[in-house]
Image (tube, rainbow, N blue to C red; front, side):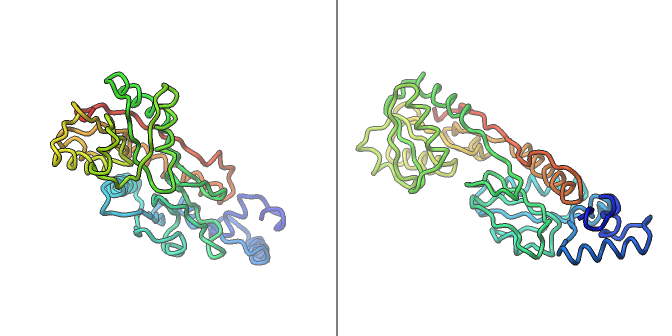
Length: 299
């Protein structure tokens, strides 16, 4: 953009954001070049100069799931400390927030489409997306180390017939558990995440790895209803680290993630992407947040 207009990058920023300190003739030349190139300035980039203008769009998968609700609450709290407004959609799409938000953070469990021609410079950050989009920043979850620790914990307690509950199409989190058991010489069968104890009992499992903590809570309830002792007969592990895991009986062992760290990384990455669209040089738009294994009463 600066090269076709024959001016510096800073001059382009001043012209397209209507900032003082630029000759009117130069401003007109820059804006003419912008129209010719169909260039649209980043709204969030303007907010870097005028912080009161910042509005963050937050896309979440399902607020009835405490996992998404906890993350949304954490983002709202941290955004407020930075003086940002937040608009939220459930789940919606990036296109729904064009014109209403200066940047978008998405945590939906689905891959987000780009905002389209109407907002080519809209910064978008995805949290734990199923596949990476080259134009988006992303927060990746690293589960493998915590998964290996959970498997070691189960094996040390005598687990030899584990079952891993998973989505019909498979998922990286379940595959990581299967691989970790295999590395230790133990075979883990994969079954549907909605299977109940009636379906699982004929396999005589001594450990169940739920797809997430909500699934772990359901398994604990189902096992109690069938008088199956946890962890004496069957050990149960969840994934997500929901705070509710501290309040079930027995308390659920889980792979936990620090949601404050996730939210902070997403908001920092939004600013980094906005600086890039405003003429800066963004670094690698990826942040990695690790899980950690929490051993509780269910194992």
